[in-house]
Amino acid sequence: MGPCPFLTPGHGCGNGGRRLGVSFEAQDRPVSAQDPDVVVVGAGPSGVASALLLARAGHRTLVLDGARFPRDKACGEGLMPSGVAVLRRLGLLDALVADGAPRLHSVTYQMLGQPFRATAAFPRPPGGGPGWGLGVRRLRFDTVLAEALRVEPGVTFVEGTRVSGPQRDALGHVTGVIAEGSAIRARCVVAADGLHSPLRAAAGWTSPAPHHGRYGLAGHWRVDTRDIHGITVGFAGGHEWYQAPVGPEELLVSVLGGRHTIGAIAHDYAGSARAALPLVAGADPLGGPLAAGLFHQRPRHVAGDGLFLVGDAAGYDDPTTGEGIAVGLLLAERLAVHLDAALTERISPSAAAAAYTRDHRRLWTDRRRLTRLALLMAAHPRASRRAITRAATRPAALEALLGVNCGYWGFGRLSARDWLSLAGI
Ligand SMILES: Cc1cc2nc3c(=O)[nH]c(=O)nc-3n(C[C@H](O)[C@H](O)[C@H](O)COP(=O)(O)OP(=O)(O)OC[C@H]3O[C@@H](n4cnc5c(N)ncnc54)[C@H](O)[C@@H]3O)c2cc1C
Image (cartoon, rainbow, N blue to C red; front, top):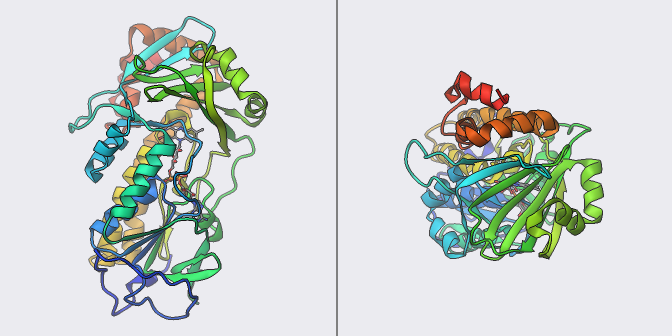
């Protein structure tokens, strides 16, 4: 990776707190005082968190999203406690709770159609803070986040504007983006444009996805959820159903599995959900389902040449462990620290890219192992039945795994006894 162009001599850090006049004229010139310091592409959770933090550090931040809000998004809508903690640090938690997002205290695993089930509570965060997750209906959650962008001094938020790719100079350094055919210059670009990140693809950083990838569907049902305080994962032999309360009368029901299974369920999502899940057997669907896949995306790089990937754009394995939003928010915090240091010339741009790449690896390594373990269990009903039967009387191992998923500790936390009970012994 070469040096990043946004530290052009004579262009210091931004002065947040004022509105930008956004020009969409293509020009071949250095970044000027009118240009944003940072362009963030995508106003999902990762993009919003990155933009708020960069603007609060004093950098003029332009956020572009191809959609207009409110917009919906296929998601299991279970925000892990580690993500709740980031929202609290951002000052957004009260607005979300006021919006009706229910607290989630546990995860229940069950074999569908069989009497085996085990419940594990989210462990207490070792450093304090919220020990519960949130059921976040994306239609409302992302709207609250978008509203936070609109009122943040130092942020300009432009909706309905698709970005086709990064703009580069003759040396290949990213100097801005191409939006709706026009160039916008900036000192650096953050791609928070989701799982199939067009910016990542245009940068040539997308790796081929595996042939046998997984897909998902997510819909909502009118169910009284006042007595439901956790996520339920139901193994169905080759695919899994997920249920989570996302409002007082709104239950999220998503299903994950291979292409053919999800394709077949998509033909009759409501009928399949009713047949699989007693809770919705007599309930009315509220809408959907929305579909998504191919999940497994591993980019070649997550930062370099003035381009930084965050959230799903920076790579993703599978929604089965429900940590996507939380990790996106945690990544945004790390990204903002390193980008701020580079924009204020305390470290070099390449040092910022290297530090962010290390943080990305650190945040994902154990979580990816956990995802592999969860997928292994899901694919082997006999193993998952044994583990669930054992966890019903001894949930400690599952709770330790939830702590790994939240980033509270690593796999070293699990004792030999924990591993034995996960093996059903
Ligand atoms: C079925 C399913 C179940 C899931 N379950 C969970 C769960 O329970 N818990 C959890 O935490 N995560 C879950 N996830 C994952 C979660 O949805 C993602 O990790 C999360 O949405 C990533 O956020 P993001 O900000 O990176 O991207 P996104 O939320 O995808 O936002 C990307 C934004 O970029 C915009 N954009 C895209 N391309 C362009 C462009 N060219 N120009 C301008 N704007 C653009 C889009 O309009 C969008 O607003 C699930 C995902 C699926 C599909």
